[in-house]
Image 1 (cartoon, rainbow, N blue to C red):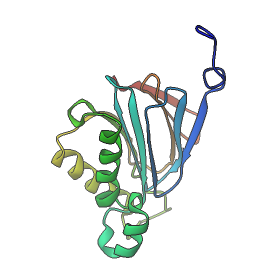
Image 2: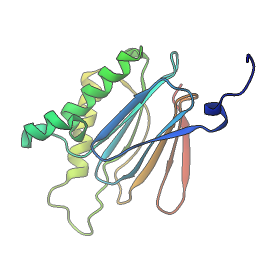
Image 3: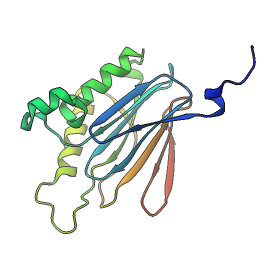
Image 4: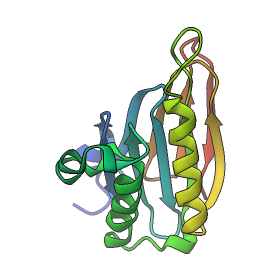
Length: 174
């Protein structure tokens, strides 16, 4: 019936992206969410013209340490997950030159000195990929010592992120 509300519009859906996973969508009833971005980095991308967005929750910077794992789970690594996110978004008609990014995570969550510096290495890898692909970063919440939770509303491009102390911030990727 024209003009009627749909179930999806009455009850928006949430898709959870776990560690080493990604999701992309053009469904305006969806909110994509990822939790506990500590040393991991969350890459949120949105094309406002076609309302296509996605989130990548990468865990490590370089897949060469575990090529078989990267083949099975490319989103685990920056160098395999980032290109996969871009392919998934363009497959939904997003254009790379229109994408706006929000980056979160890359924290040093270990108490004391972090000999592996995973958060910093993840950030370097993501920044290099952003630069190589000439993409626009509209906002970021990076580094520090706390984790973040991030949500992307596909209908609007609104990104909300929350810190453990319940502080919440929002940016529009439009």
